[in-house]
Image 1 (cartoon, one colour):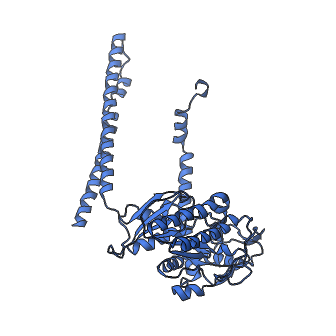
Image 2: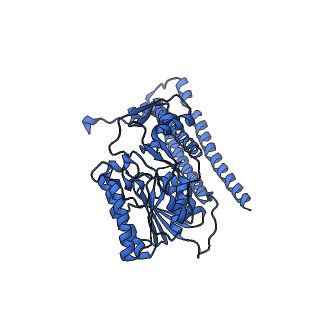
Image 3: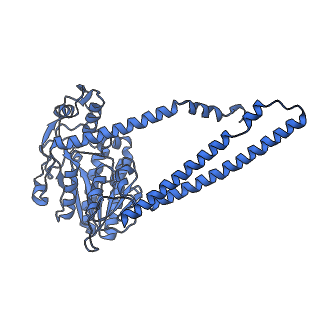
Length: 445
């Protein structure tokens, strides 16, 4: 029965399109049959009276055609409205979600849910059958990341800045809202601090009012440039409080402090995840992080730039592993901070050559000046996650990188197509004629 319904709607769409085409063809042939050529080929009028008669006849014809064109435009508008109505009534296809009854289905808020990590978390929770509310101000998040869920009965998207209070009813909150890459959080350091302090206060206040459990997405940056290696959760960190990264580092440290203050004073159920370097599809292409920089430069056959001597180390986890860890932490009864990262360590220079090999091409790897306060070593101790969450990364580095490279390649192709179409339009003669037609006389106002 469903297939028959869809087929009838498709036929209706085809009929509307055919009707529009037919109307345009009729107008075209009517214009071809104008008796203008006959008038041109005929002898010139012999008297003023004949000239006025011909002129009046032409004017009547023009007026009739003007009215015909107006009626045609109205008909086209009506047909377009019918087509839009038909398309809006055609149900969208969504990924198949699990059914949960009212006892097991949760109403979950994700701040920053249109971002890189947040959108993958949305996918996981939606497929599990929960109701998901995404709150995002779209500073670094993009609607495209969650567009495939728009209109679903279990999904809601709210354009809102969490720096301002939010009043809704939820069971769980994942607080991911904050720019996470150096170029983004350094762009507006005061705003970054506000998001991680006032935003966290608003989230914790909401959790207190509705008695919801809240997970705070902290970061490995709370360890600063560590003097302990690898970094356990018990390490207090080595952070420059007035450096260029301080707005993010100290903002996250205050966010953790606020969380445990609310837990002790207001009995809010709090979970804290300290997230290490993460990569995968939907990363912002120009976020300035190691993975996106290297992949983008390699795909464009540009020089792969390594900051400093390239001996500084990082540990990279795939986004699917991180999302599994966040959900496991939320479901657990463990209340202390937990490192979520990959304990396999790579130097930045080594990582650059891995990406160059996977992408191919003729890019060179060159060193450039080191960045201020750039941590020299970063590797998580995940024994706590293994013990209390039964969690550890599973996706191999090269498999995750191949998926990420494929995503970046498609994004570049999409961007190049858009640029080519824009160039074709702005260099076209039609645009030049249009600009001349609508040129304004600035002297006369």
